[in-house]
Image (cartoon, rainbow, N blue to C red; front, side, top):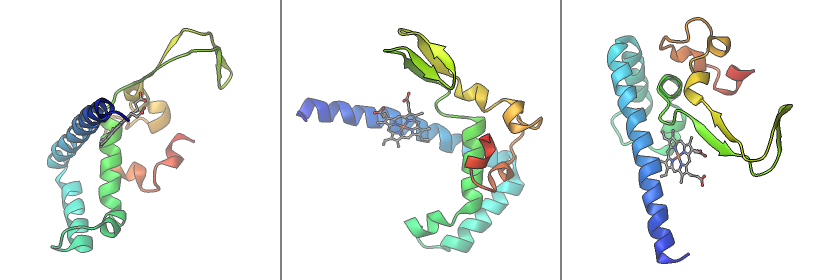
Length: 139
Ligand code: HEM
């Protein structure tokens, strides 16, 4: 890589990594302030697992409530609200035929807000949706 490439990669990390993570954490703080019951559960878990020391990777992997809260915030307020792809050849996506030269949009925000996948309480903050992890939710 040339130094110019490294500089461009650093810019991408800054944009892709900083804005997304900052939005995610900001929403998490807002949502927890609106739901003191989950705030209390989250605080209790952090104190139980990490105590007063600086958390390490092992501690973080045991933060189950925190993970559920973060997943639910991701669902309700995804930092990236859509994905865009451009077909460079004819493409078959699950039986849907897409010709070459089409821009395909995957509307993350709409999928996260669809009662068909999440139930009628789709607009509610309910971290318990993720008590079994994430893979089961879209089956
Ligand atoms: C809450 C945090 C984050 C979210 C929600 C997020 C989301 C995403 C999404 C959805 C994409 C795919 C975009 C696409 O293909 O159209 C992506 C790509 C990328 N993200 Fe993140 N991201 C996060 C954090 C980070 C961090 C911390 C970094 C780096 C320090 C980072 C670096 C990148 C890079 C470099 C790509 C482009 C990968 C490629 O296509 O070559 N992201 N991110």
